[in-house]
Length: 438
Image 1 (tube, rainbow, N blue to C red):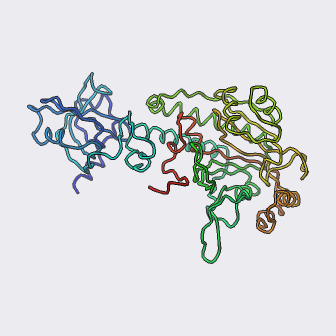
Image 2 (cartoon, one colour; image 1 turned 120 degrees about the horizontal axis):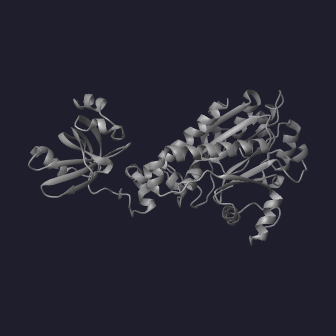
Image 3 (spheres, rainbow, N blue to C red; image 1 turned 135 degrees about the horizontal axis):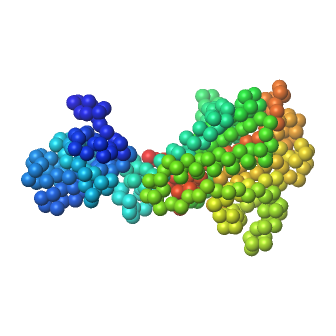
């Protein structure tokens, strides 16, 4: 295939500049838009970096090129070689006059979904044809922002001396101790898909001090809401010698860093999606303060209740563009591995926290129990089987320091930052109770 050499030498559209005007270049991408004015035909070519106008004149261009400008279907993949010229009317102030026009792949027409910026195709159908929906500039913008979030998360913790880990996704016992797990056949045994990397990241923190990861987790909860899916990506950390307050402050720093990176690196995407993004401030309140505040603001809630969607939404209204850290929760509302206050099994409160951002929980975390006897007491208190967690308990018998950690849902944070109505839009290939394809 003789086009490989041209493809290796092609220029990305965003790399074209004033020095290229008058020069011959090769570009490749997808047909984004077309216009036919009779004797002049326009086409907009899109690659991952941007768009470039292509122009052909009936009396100047070759007949083959002029005909292809009209015949090629939208979203077909093309290779063009030609001269760059200045054009005040073209996007970016320049356009290409094709001397060679090659169709590498024809897109069937009509497309199953509308891929324009003003698409009216409903989300379920867009997800049915997700591989076509990815052609939309707005869909791409969401995942370019998500890419910045994930890479800046990794860069931040790598620069802080954290060790990246890859936890197992097949495990022998439910990470959170609940029943909402996907069970799978594992040779002659029964296993389950990990609800969380919790038990494993604690083991790493208790030996290598500081660890981080981005990992998929699965929850077999039969919900059907715009903020829940059954397979998610978690951004997790776990740190030895840190309290719940220490890791809350660490989360404040990294989220501010991540959002700052989005503001700096995703200006085009922010403009395309019409977003208003600010670096958030932070507010710290204990659970009792939070309940008192919510009751004063008309939320029906009592001490001992979890924060329902209405309560989270109200916190978002009271503290806009703020990371609201609600800490020192009742021990009854937190998992078995969260440290009770004063290291007492019957303590009313725990060293656990949640973080609410823009009216939605993005994080759960806290100090963990590192004392085997206390851990056994809490496991029994929660009605779980001690034997099934033997390896986890034993991991704290050989020099385990106090430690804390948290996790942030990558898709949920993307959804909030991009002002989306449904978490599925922030998930490349969503998995919920009704969707297993594509």
